[in-house]
Length: 106
Image 1 (tube, helix red, strand yellow):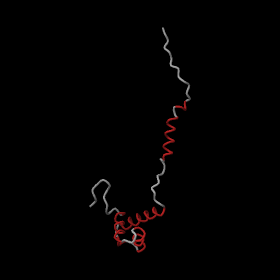
Image 2 (cartoon, rainbow, N blue to C red; image 1 turned 180 degrees about the vertical axis):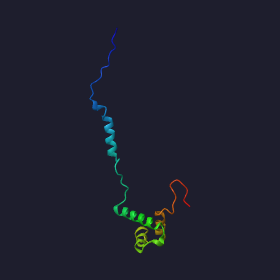
Image 3 (cartoon, one colour; image 1 turned 90 degrees about the vertical axis):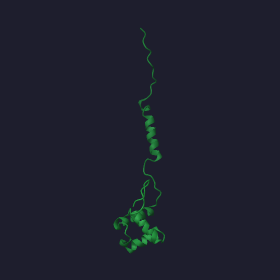
Image 4 (cartoon, helix red, strand yellow; image 1 turned 90 degrees about the horizontal axis):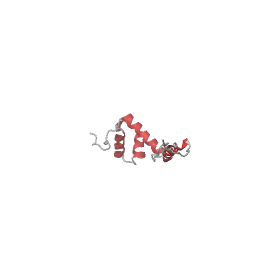
């Protein structure tokens, strides 16, 4: 009877099998799986947060705004246009605007 030739394996360390997985993990971390920058400055985030708070409190009703809030909306956010400020308030309150890929709300 002949003995089958046993395959001679080269002696590779056990960490050799883990190396490709570790390399993929490090590549994903390096590519930016962390926080993504949305491109807004701190002042822009503050303005957006304030607009959201105003819209939630007033439910988009222009008559419920204080004088300071109207000034903020007209001068700071819509560059002097009251009509744009009203539309911005309504949009922030969810009263106007359609959903992406769908028909406009009525």
